Length: 230
Ligand SMILES: O=C(O)COP(=O)(O)O
Ligand SMILES: [Mg+2]
Image 1 (spheres, protein in one colour):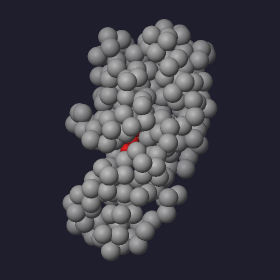
Image 2 (tube, protein in one colour):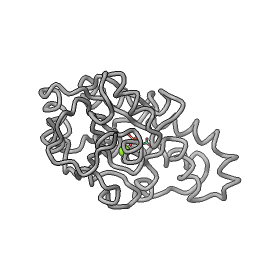
Image 3 (cartoon, protein in one colour):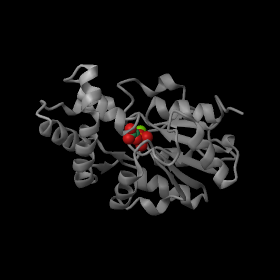
């Protein structure tokens, strides 16, 4: 059952499924340091931060591959991937959480969701080795009843499976859940799962307006999102 064009506020909602990068945390400043550290060690020129913003959303392999593709032909990219991934992990483990910031209204939104007794899951395409320390460093970890990362299952967003599993784990149907994200990957996963969809306009959506994803609402903050469900 797919909810589209629902009246706001959405009712009979029991589960909130939150994206991480670009929705809760502006992680690009850390990714910038890690990716450019990787490139330097590979003796490749740097990439600028505006390009990096366009690469985030489909997981770490895709991020590293897109970054290498700025400078290398596709066969060279594939030959370089193993060492590049190792270098990216080395730098990102060090810098993760150092320069990133929590978007306005995130903490207030999470608090209100807790007060409303909603079950809160984080479903991210970030690997678990980076997700949990990043949430903890920003004092967000304790708000979550469930955290699913890119390596929790064999598939990640835009596949609907992690969102469907989150609903099942809490004992609710997907149409009793709202996914909140910043990119087409969140939108496609939410719709295929049968969840409602809110989108934030301030994250990373490959430079495209989030309205193109036909969300149930575009929300300026997680606090506004929390006010639109009951
Ligand atoms: O790491 C990514 O590619 C994006 O992560 P997200 O799913 O939290 O936006
Ligand atoms: Mg995101």
